[in-house]
Amino acid sequence: MFLFSQCFCNMNLAAYTQGTIVGWPSPVLLSLQSENSPIGGEPMTDEEASWMGSVLCLGALLMTPIYGYLSNNHSRKLTGYLVGIPPIICWLMIIFARSKTTLFVARFMIGNVGAGNTVLCPLYVTEIAEDDVRGSLVTCVMLFFSIGVLQSYIVGSYASYQVLGFACISLPILFVFLFYWMTESPVYLMSINRHTESRKALSWLRGNDKQTVDREMEKLTKVLNRSKEDSSSAFSILELFTKRGSRKTMLICMGFAINMGLSGAFALMTFTVRIFQEFGSELFPDLSAIFVAILQCVFEPRVKPTAVTLCCSFVWAINFLMSKFFLPVASHVGLAGCYWFFGGVCLLGAVFCHLVMPETKNRSLEDILKELAGEKRFTKP
Image (cartoon, rainbow, N blue to C red):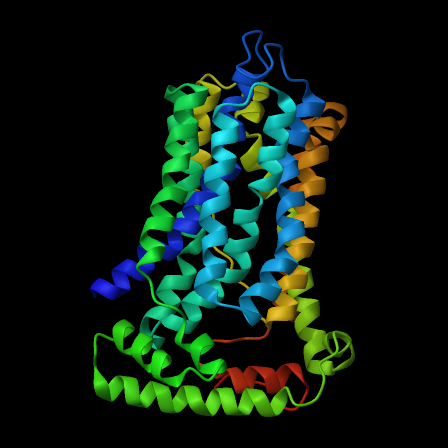
């Protein structure tokens, strides 16, 4: 239970950190667009605000394929430090920024966390967790992300620009400290033929339960041997679109990616305070945002590493476009027009899910893959 709690808290701190980063612009935007702006001494324009909210998506878009390569070919633990150390530097830049350029550069660089959280963290959790707790670890990522957004909304409602920054920087510092005590992934150690160290790491994760370690080492050996056999032939990215099963999987993942991006969730979280202000809410705009953060939902795609990298990159690209052009479009068509569009996208997403998404309940991965490949059609009992 201790190891489960440690892994649970440590890995979800990355999602928590990302949540504070995404939620940060919303409460500070009113201050930055006021006459007494803490950055530059002059109000930030809507154009500059749209760049501030969206530029981190460009950073995440750039880092996603890099994380995809590093996490699949190098040490998971060393790569994991990239999720925690750069954000500390970025938050210091944000806290002590004296120009908008410095702020924009820091926001671009801090997109690193989003890339690491969507690519590396699920992989690391999957490789170190036991079967009966793996789902609990992975599916809580979006919950902790929402809590992080909520923290930025709450602290930003009552604290100054600098105080909010210091509250946010504490999370990556805590992540780096806790991650230091985590072990390297047994799967990675096994893949580079460091069998003794792999057993030692797995033994630490399983509380020195020799029977469990022996069973999992045997299973791990079989999986890696099969993986090596499959990788004996060169992999082409075209296989994701030419093979029937892979093509349908990519269709499902890309469909979800488009739905997630065009639903406007990222833009709404970034500019929640501004939205409530324009609605003329009787509540303080920054306090109203707190209630929005509680309503976040969970989605975690399960696909191959290459597909994950492509889909995550696609999502970050759409998020950038949506957050960059949300304010200009809203000023022309109104918030009501934006919400009609977002609602329509969500409705189409539900129809898409009903028509295309295969049933996964009580089914093995092999059975699902066979259905996607057209080899077997699932029928309800």
